[in-house]
Image (cartoon, rainbow, N blue to C red; front, side, top):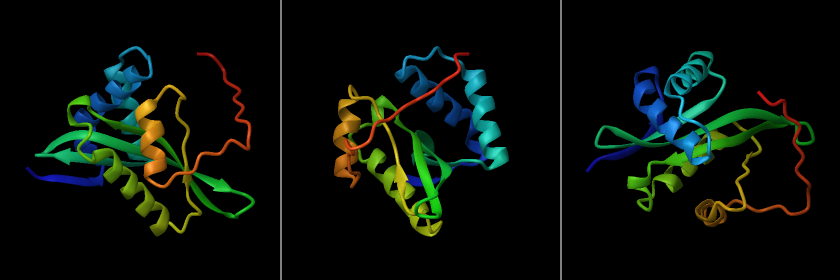
Amino acid sequence: MKSSIRKATQEDLIQLSKLFDEYRMFYHKTSDLAGAQQFLSDRLKKNDSEIFVAEDNEKLVGFVQLYPLFSSTRMKLYWLLNDLYVNAGFRGKGFSKALIEEAKELCRTSNSCGMYLETGKENIIGNQLYPSAGFKKYDEVNFYEWTIDV
């Protein structure tokens, strides 16, 4: 069995779109495979996010997607780990941690000040995974959101 973590390419689009659609459904969104494919194709073409995939025997089994931001107080690049997903049949095999380690390496090589993420309080697995991967939970700040419903 050969497993690897690598940067996503346009050639991954079909398999990656299926994983991305599964990810969205995990967060209670309606399946939209065509929309997922268009969204990811745009990200890859515009190079406005970094996507790494976990591959097992030439099958994509997970991904992580990060978006670049900036910290004004630190005057450095800061990454938002926005999406992390591993197919249910491949969980518990270290793919999530390997994807997080690849994200950490991106932070190091891009001379950023780090990365942050958010996850739901009900995400039991994520809320165990992230501290074990070195993330610190901050209760000192309030998180606010303003959205436009579409």
